[in-house]
Length: 299
Image 1 (cartoon, rainbow, N blue to C red):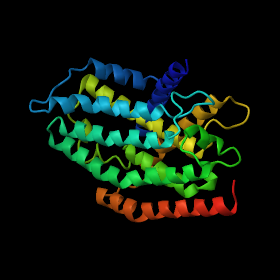
Image 2 (cartoon, rainbow, N blue to C red; image 1 turned 180 degrees about the horizontal axis):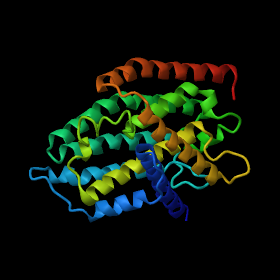
Image 3 (cartoon, one colour; image 1 turned 120 degrees about the vertical axis):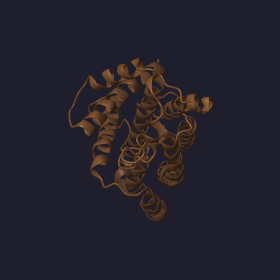
Image 4 (cartoon, rainbow, N blue to C red; image 1 turned 135 degrees about the vertical axis):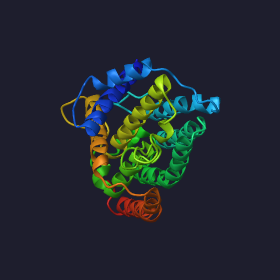
C-alpha cells in the first residue's frame, strides 16, 4: 500500500515540478503545459542516429530514470511511509545518484554526436567535482543523527532542524543538488546556449520523454532529500506528516528552479575550480564545526 501511495505522490510531484519549471522558463503558470508537451513528444517520430551505439543510446534514459527511482526509495514521506527503510539509507541515496553520471555518459556517447558527447563528458567533470559536496554534507548530517537511516535523520531534528544546526552544509548540498540535476545555471550537460541541447540533442519522441521524465524524478528526489536531511522531513505542526513533506519538497524544488536562471552563468572550468577549492574547504569546515558543536552542546 505504501509503495502505491509513494508512486502516486512521486507522479504528482513530478507534474508539479514540471509546472514550476515551465513557470521559471516562460514566466507563465500553465497547469496543462506538461501534459500537452508530453503528448506532443510521444506523438513525434523517433529518429535513430545512423551510427549510434544502440545499446547505450537506448539504455541511457532508462538508467537515468532507474537512478531517480532508487533515490526516492529511501526517502520517508511520513512515519512508516517509505518504500525501504535501510539502515544505510543516506549512503544508498548517494550510491543511486552515482548512476546519474553513468546514464548521462551513455546518453551522450550512444548517439555518436559531437554535442551529446561533449555534454556527457562535461557532466563527468562536473559530477566528480560536485560528488564530494553531496557526500560530505551527508556525513555531517549522519554525525548529528548518529545514523545513516533517513528516518533517524528526520527524528534527530525534532528539537532543531539541520538547516539551523549546519547552514553551511545546507547551502553546499542544495548547490550540489542543482548540479546533479543539471539545473541552470549549472546545466553543463545540455548547455542550451552552446551545446544545442547536449545529451538531449539526438533524442526524439518517447526516448526524449523518458529522459525528461527521469530528470523530473531526480529533481523531486534531490528536493525531498534536502527536506529529509535539513528541513525536518515530515516534522511540523497541525498538518499530517506527508503534507509537510510534500509542501517542503515543492518549496525546495521551486526555489531551485526559480533561483537558478537568475544566477550568473560561469565557464565550466570556473565552476569546477570553485567546487574543488572553495566547496570542499567549506564542507570540511562544516564537518569540523558539527563535530565540535556535538561535543560541546549536544542537541
